[in-house]
Amino acid sequence: MTARLAILADIHANIWALDAVLAHAKSRGIDRFLNLGDSLYGPLKPQATYERLMQANVLVTIQGNQDRLIYEASERDLASIPTLSYVIRDLGEEPIHWLSELPRTAVFEENIFLCHGTPGNDTIYLLEDIMDGLPEVRSEGAIRELLQGVHHPVVLCGHTHIPRVVDLAHGQLVVNPGSIGVQAYDDVDPVRYRMQTFSPHACYAILEKSNTGWNVSLERVAYDHRAAAEFARTRGRDDWAQGIATGRIG
Image 1 (cartoon, rainbow, N blue to C red):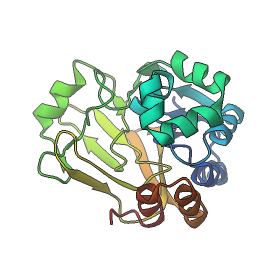
Image 2: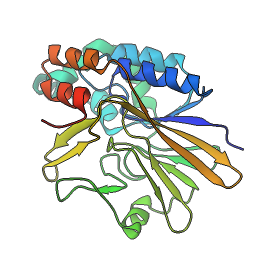
Image 3: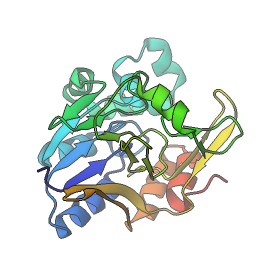
């Protein structure tokens, strides 16, 4: 029987939030972690975050789309994206090599499938449609189509930064733990849209197999978000600071 697991996602180099989540999980008697990617990209503390993940009992880590951005960076990217340039300077070679070696998807103990976005694409949201500017849960058929035949009892996904649990009609459970590090952001691709949790709390999930099914707890952990936001401001990223400090897009 699968023991209790803490599910991490979208840390985005927020060491303040990660430390609080690890301590919170420990207080719940949990010392085994699965990590759904986007761990080290952000105008915060990439190297420190990497070191903390190496110290924790993370059983599986997969890549996120912004993990790829780090190890695939071109000279043009470095010249045009100051945050990316900062991340690469702060990390050094070893963490970047580690990122490049991570799998895009994984299976844990035969019954838990891990992906960042969808099984086939780390930039597509599995559970949410954002074409109207705000996240709306996709239809059952759309979710199953994006699963591309993945049949494991539990599917874990990240990328949206929105905590959510969806129980599909055929019994499959899809869990997004939300983001540890960034609680709100916006984008313009493919349309302008916003992702917001409306709280600065760091988010993760606790997953446990019981005699009657899978128990899921979506946890929200208080931490020194002001320190994280202020650090983002010192890196010239007021947008990140706003999302971290408030869980809202200004």
